[in-house]
Image (tube, rainbow, N blue to C red; front, side):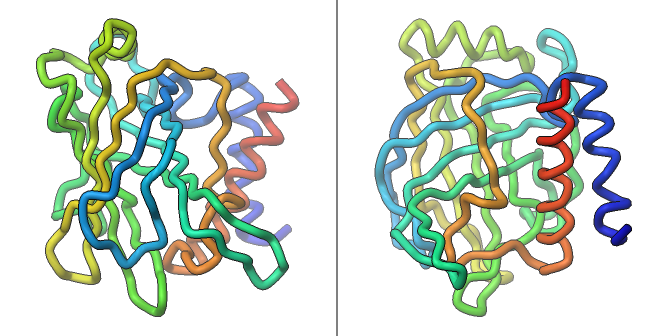
Length: 226
């Protein structure tokens, strides 16, 4: 069995045992809009989005946890080497993201306002590495890290707002997108960062991309068996 399969196989067992994702088992799915707020070298564009805000471990109530953000972004259409077309990007971020978002270790956070999530590792596009992070700015008056309170805010007409920032190599982060999530959506909406990625973008380093691909494959198998 390949080394990547040996490392990834436990994701199938854990997903089957929990009947859910290994990480970020519970989340709030919303739809909304992504608006470009600046120039970006990445192939993203303005348009409708669906996003899932989650807690990494799944701690109850408003207890601290690692924040997760999965968002399906519209991108410039592209075709990969296998002839597959790509028009969306399932981008996964987690945090908080210390060290300016570079090689960060995800740590628990205590409240939604100001929470920062990161790609944790860079993406390669046009032979250049880019780091991606996002910062939650609204609702700005919630205490604790309760998904129920976040759900109530959206239901009451108070959207989740996050700003997405990109840094080229070691340069400063620059805001490029604003996410406004204002409609509760299908909680079973499924994100897949392996198959829904722009043809010109890849996770770096390549071995990590291969490992993540295997982990998602086994996790999906485990959930389907549950």
